[in-house]
Length: 254
Image 1: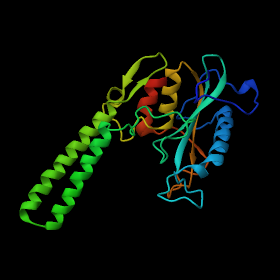
Image 2: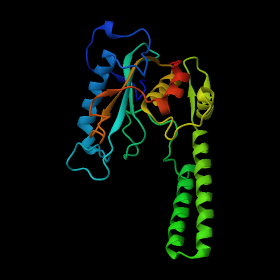
Image 3: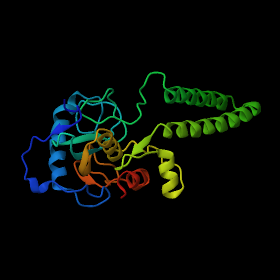
Image 4: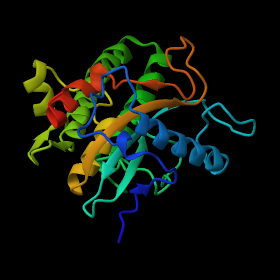
């Protein structure tokens, strides 16, 4: 039985396009086989995005904040020597559950009653209380507000650290390491916000867990261009340095 996220190629291509080893995710060249996989994925998105809640800024009947997304493809050889690819997006999309074709996040923030949901509710309640006290504009209230702001800051830091503790990544040798340890060992810092949610680490983790051999990887932007135009619709971009380099350095040794 084939894995639900393993997508066989629809396009016929020459075997010479199959690389011997995975490319550098931070390189400027996009492997041709990844371009083929990306085109197939883009066709899939075009056919289905009208039914999704997420607003990429491309349709006329969408509501909510426009958020373009980085999508990634990882060409793999499965345990049965079949050729295909995995795909996913960076971060979250508005739709939950998301389409089953996409590789899931390492940690499901939508799990009922999980610590993150509870923690975010508590932070919101604290923020609302601060707003009410600030409106009172009383000397005693100001003291309480400062204490609440400090409590909120500490709570937020601890919640983020607990979240990072849920992420563990495999490398090509099958060894596992926590996100916190990966960043500490790389350059002695804490993980950047959103680390572990980018497309490339999610794809590689899924492949390693299922004994698939990664052959080529690429990411492209889907949606309205950013204001600075550093991200343009359908264009390919290397993996990010701030969030991904420490993780991918561990997973691939790059």
